[in-house]
Image 1 (cartoon, rainbow, N blue to C red):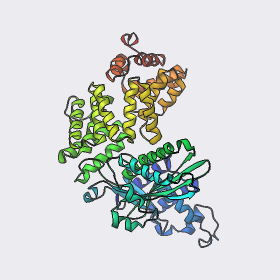
Image 2: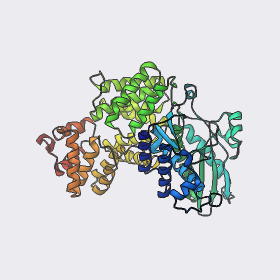
Image 3: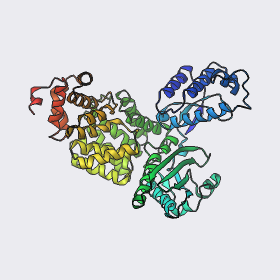
Image 4: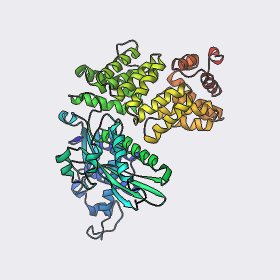
Amino acid sequence: MVREEQKESADAVLAELARILGSPRFDASERNRRFLTYVVEEALAGRSERIKAYTIATEVFGRDSKFDPQLDSIVRIEAGRLRRALEHYYLTDGRTSGLRIDIPRGGYAPVFAVEAVALPQALAGSPRILVTAFEEEGDQSSFPTFTRGFTRSLIIALTRFTGLRVFGAETALRHPSDFDLGASRREVGADYLVTGQTSLQPDHFEVDVLLVEAATGRVVWAETFERQLKPSEIIALRNDVANRVARAFAPPYGAIRSDRARDAEGKAPELLGSYAAVLLFYAYWRTFDQAMIEAVRVGLEQAVATEPDYAEALACLSLVYSNAYRFGHVTGAPDPDPRDRAAALAARAVELAPSSSWARYALGLARWFSGSPAAALEALEAGRALNPNDTTILADLGQRYAMLARWDEAVPLLEESYAGNPAQPGSYRIGLFLYHFAHGRFAEALAEARRVNAPQVLYGHVAVAAAAAELGLDDEAADAVSAIRGLDPDYGVHIVDDLEGRHVAPELVPLIVAGLEKAGMPIAESSRSS
């Protein structure tokens, strides 16, 4: 990303500060929260020149007037922690924020920057990843090939993502983990380095992994993985860690997507607005916020009108129309049936980018809501084959299998998807709700239903109402029924038609209807007897 620094309104900055402080992903101490608040408020008041180590120590940290920053490094240390907390926030909850608050090194005064997508020439091509040879710690004589094997497994996992260009193992193993950053760009043209170390202990192993921007040396992402050292399972455990690292990096929600404005698959956009429309779509896709859908639709329609070969935008727009149908969201689209538009857009995306897993995903949903579940599963499985690590495809495929009560296929996919990406939309937990509810595990079903967190989507409330009622939680069930009726006052009249139209298995429909009736939902006689 490039940042266009400019003076922003105090209201916008304070709103962004509130979002940061309210985010569970902003991992900062109470002292550093006061630190951030103080420097932002001082800057907005025009007193940036007062933001020094001494004033922070005395006015925020409670040091007395004798504080000497030359002797006490507390402010410098805490500033480093605060910078890391801010960077983590903007890689997670803050990745779609239009305004960014930073504290540049060398001082403590904040900078307020408008996030802008990189220049069009920077959008051409996919990011180039060099996995360097990892350092080794501990006694690895019992498993002398562990580290080289991990490097190769990580390269294989990353190459499954069509939005990345990954150098082969021969190139990777030729470069040590302390490989010069400038040389990485001159010699192999890498955009990012993956580096780190492995450590083998008698009873466990650890892998430390860092994703580093080659041009600047900036650490984009870092994590430590620890597993029990079981000789009979060491290869499988090593490969599991490699796959988890790859998921954390890769499109559509990974660290590289957050760090760079790049097209994942198909033709890269030539216009800034086209890519911005796709970024807005991904922000919408995490919550399915009804208030966003029309702005997302209009932006994507403009993108595909000006760049008709932009496959990713076509796939995203198809998904918008599929959502408009399945959630009953009103749009300004001229097409009387959004399913027709969804199917046409997805088919064109597949034609333009046949290796795009996201295009196949869009085609799968379009087919599902057009009444062809078998063809939908075929398209979704094709997307999964193209990119086995895409947690969105894993989750949605698992969701479809769950609706068909094909539990042996559904549950592993859903569990794997959330293990790989715990922050993905909670709406996919409906599949796990159905699994537990169908087997009479109502407490587990309610726990999954509560985690859906999509207030504008009716089905999360349906799940809560049915499970809470079975557990005798009358107040929670009544609140959920009220939310259902607020979204669709007549849902009790057409619930069976709705569930059957969504291909919910025949044995599941009466269970859900009975649960809603127990929750106090008015159900039409025809629905009760179905």
